[in-house]
Structure formats: structure tokens, C-alpha cells
Length: 565
Image (cartoon, rainbow, N blue to C red):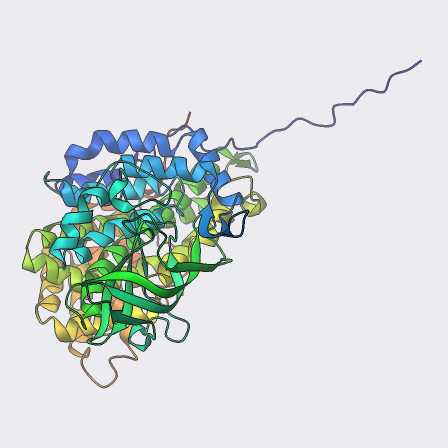
């Protein structure tokens, strides 16, 4: 009797091991920016968090949290309305790490210098573990400055919002060890035009209001507290709405369904209705937009941080793969075409990270009362939100392509998930047109912001290319209040971001990075013209990997190298 045996058909060769067991905080641009902005004291924790983010067990948590999507339970087994969302245990593990390391609202209660910069750097590191759970983390961070418009509410809830304890589940807020916050602003008919909201708020006679209506997007619906916009008798007003009332009963906030989204799959986004839900006004009645703007500013900063982190993650994955995968007798990275692509992605990553942390420093100092930094933040943040977030899908797609067909396979690397997630930050908190138009509002309503921007750029006065770009930018700024201002708003936003990045890199980056950025992203046309002779160098007109001669590519590529276990 013969037994069939499986023959060895081939050996598995030239496959790149998964990128795991590395320190995500091993990022020279990030670390130098953190030190420069005064948060060098946080480096030890950054590396601790970086090792966690790069660990194989964390990557498995990220995978599970995304393939096991949140599930809405509107009713329990006996027909009672519960309106709860069930998450995979891996989601809760990711949340526990984020909250325990203070990525949520902890900086608002931290007296150490540059606490917000430290938090921004930690957010950038940990979001490279998994981006979706950053939504409630970011919302909670952004809720505090808005809540401070009502000191009584802030005194009541801020200590729990800044607590380092993750305490999921729906219970009365003041009986929990820690709280998370969400927000609900947009409605079906208005979208970003929140003044078109129809949700009503009727005074209840005891200082609270009864809200009736709906929200088309409600972020993080299992949060404990929500900032909500509704039409009060005085006009559009911001309210604080708890999921559970002090007596333990559920507030009249009903989850209709969860959004079936392109990406951001681990996080629940919902449609909700209110049927005389109890809420308390935050800030001056009738000035809800003004009140909520402090929250929007903080969440926009997190959009920039999250996108810069995604660019870094995608670049590192592509760089490592190209260094280990061989073709035609040599590593991919040694082939000139691939070397140029990885170098170009690295330059983009360093520019995004450097600007993101500079804005975090501005936010930190603005929160402490620095008027000049507040003016810079007011104009630079919408520009960076527009530019960096909009660049992320294109950069992520280029990084994915560096892996060839392997990059398109779900279980080979996180890049398919990163690509699906990549458009979100550009859409969230105001898509491209909204961000660009907000930039115009800043220039017309905050007179000092243009001067603060030019003063920051002019700190690179020794770099001729930056000064030429600054002259071009001045010409555009002079036209920012003209009849065609809105038509050119996107162009202006992009040029502000790129010129500011160039100034920062000229002052702080290695010469190889600075030279590559200046020679490929800055225009060489007449003042006021953002278009270079190579196409739109600061935009998608020039493909990645089209670098000029004479650059130190080896030094650039080395900046995206990491050591993995």
C-alpha cells in the first residue's frame, strides 16, 4: 500500500516580514520638533508609547477593531430601548492605552511646560497604531476649551474629562472614573452650514433646555457627554447633552443607525434624534458658533496631526519594504527610481510633521495667552488642515504602490486600511472649501494674523528660495480681500502651508531635506504665481519621484528608516 505525500513545490523567498517590534517614536523630525517646542521632557513616555504602537500585539488589536465593526443595539431582549453600541474588546484596549497616556483631555490639567505639545506628539505616535479610536480621544480633548465658556459646567465635568481612567458604559457621568465627549453639529439639510440647523431648544424653566430634532452625523455616540448645536429662542446655541441623566435614566437621545463608511471602520458614527432631550447651555445663548469654534480649532489641529502621522507611517512601511525586497539582484531601494520615490515621500513626511508640531506649539502658547501665537494659529491652522490632510490620500496611495501587488492585499500590511482612512481628516471639521474659506475669514476678521504669518516665515531670511516664496505669498495676501478672493482661496491656502513648511525646514531640518523641499515644492515663477516651470511643484502636477539632480538622496532616505525586531 502506498501513501501519497505532499511534494515540496517551492521555497518561500524574498518576502518581507511584517513591520512589528519597532519604536514608532523613532522619528528624527518628530523628536527634534518636540524638543524645539519645549516638550523634550516627554521623550521617555513617547518612546514607551512608540514601542507599544509598534508591537505585534497592538497591530492585532488594530486589525480586530477594524474587521469587527461596531454594532448598534437599539433595544434589549425584552424590547426596551437601550441605544447602545457594542465594540470589539480590542477597541477598548486601544482606548485604555490612549486615555491612560493622556492623549485625550489630560493636557488641560497639566501644568508642565508645553503639555499640549507633548500630547500632540503622543497622539501622532499612537494614532499610527490605529487611527479610528482617535475620534473620541480628539473630541474629548477639544471639548474642554468650549466647556470653559460655562465655568459651572467646566468645574463639574472637567476633572472627569481629564482623568486618566477609561471607564466605558452608560452610567451617570459624575459616578464614573472618567468621561469621554462627542459632538453633534451637522444636520441633513445643512451640513457645514450649521446656521441652517432646525433642531430646537426650549427653556425648561430650571436653567436646562429641551432639545428636539436630529443630527446627521454624531461622532462617538457612546460618549458620556455631547456638545450639540440647537436653535434656542436667542438663536443658535451650544449645549452640553449627557447620555445618562443624574438620576440614572437615559436621556432622550436615540441612535437611528450607524454610518456605513469608506474607512474609519473601528469607530462608530451615527445618526441621532432628540425628543425633548435635556441639555444645558454652554456659553452665551445665541452665540453657539462662537462657542464651538474653540472646539473646532482643537479638532482641526488633531486632523493635521493625524494626517501627518499617517504620512509618516505610510512612508516608513514603504521605505522598509523597499530596503528588504529584492528585484533584479538588488534591494528595491537601491534602484534609482525607487530611491527617488522613497526620498520624495520622506521629504513630504518631514514637512508635514514639522509644521504639525509647530502648530501644536502655537496652540499651547495661545492657550496660555500669547496673542501673537494665537494670530499665527488662526491663519496657519486652516491652511495646514487644507493642505496636509488633502495630500495624505495621494501620499498613502504612492506608498502602497511601492509594495506593488502586495500593497493591495489586506493582510499583507496596514496600507489598505490607511488608504481607506486617508480622506477622512480632509473631510472632517470642514472639507477643502470650508477650510480655505475659513482662512479668508481669518485674514479679514483677525487683522494681525497675516503679519504673524509673514513674521514666522521671515525667520528663514537667510534662505533665498524661502524669501522668494514669501514675496509671492505677500502678493497673494494682498488680493485676499479682493473680488476674486474666494475663487483663489484654495491656491492661497496651499501656498501658505508650503511656504510655512519651507521656512520651518530651512531653519530646522537637515540640509538634504531642506534642499529637496525647496527645489521641488517652491515656485520659481514671478511673484504672486504659485505655478512653477515644472508644473505645480507644490501640488499633484509633479509625480512623486521626480527629484532634481544633485540631492543627497541617501541622507534623505535614512530619515525614514526604523529598526524592527
